[in-house]
Image 1 (cartoon, rainbow, N blue to C red):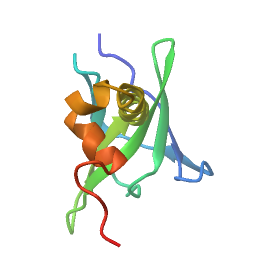
Image 2: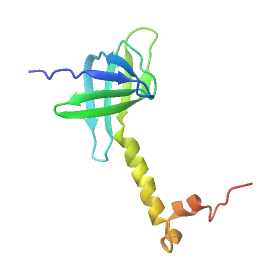
Image 3: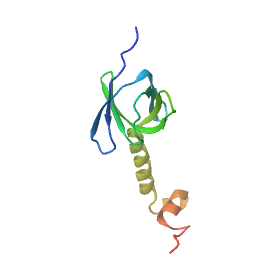
Image 4: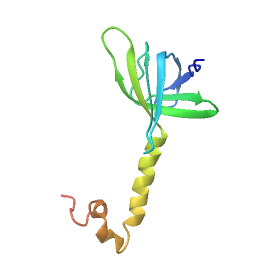
Length: 124
């Protein structure tokens, strides 16, 4: 028995609803151990980079942000989107680094030198 195709609710980057994005063929959802969560599919519409796609996976709501579209002159548009939680993973990693860049630890972590302007000062 084939799984039902999820409905993709389409929003622009400012959270204004555009409508429902129809998927042609199959939607491939990939979750990796490193936290990356992506979807790939084809459609007749062309979403813009940064548009948000909200869909329900079983009992879980998921939100993905369009990262790339491949638009041929004729045919279907291929869409690649990453989970919006990937943005939060980048943010938490950088905030953890800022707490590590205090006191004695600052000398041991190379990213602290650049961040605080210690080793490579900004040109004025």
